[in-house]
Length: 276
Image 1 (cartoon, one colour):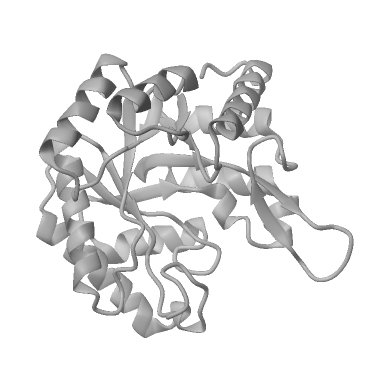
Image 2 (cartoon, rainbow, N blue to C red):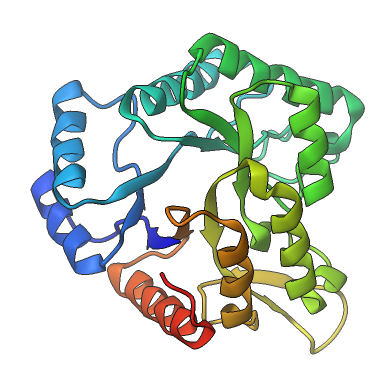
């Protein structure tokens, strides 16, 4: 597997971004551009990425495409088209929410049958309008919307019924109950054993649960800042991902935070005798 993340830090253009990329040690990254960027900018980034022999593991949408927002829908289609054009295998979004509070908010409406049908229709629409030849549209699992576990993800794949719909793995997002937290290695094994045929990109984070009182409170955090057994987890991932399968750090705010997490995962891989 190859380890990377989002290149983060202060930069004002592609050249300064390249310096950060080289310092990071990342061999897999999220796309540093979108379909709304001009072609010259995208070409410049692509030349840098190719020169540094780095894999773009995913390009994100990160917009709510439920509720009839045609601008967000067009953006999702544009991102998938761009992924297909550039040879990026994974275009990732979340399913979307019925909430008006935020684009990714928890809401009771996220679990209704009507909403599930809307999710299926919206995913099909993105794929059908983009007509990708090699890229895949995927949904990042979330704690409070579909899919929220490996079985609900398998059902979604079956119901969408499109060749270019696949899976995005984020096991920490699915550690949303005490049982999944306390039996994390068994749960992560279940996630990969069921979804590995469909996985196109993987996020890696850590998890911690407040054990000091009631009720349940679970937080995500950078690898090394929680309680997940990372050598064991990397051995699980190594069994299921191909050699060029990417694992991406995310949700940190500075180059230094990413660097610390990167070094932690590299050391955990050494302990696990897993090549990263």
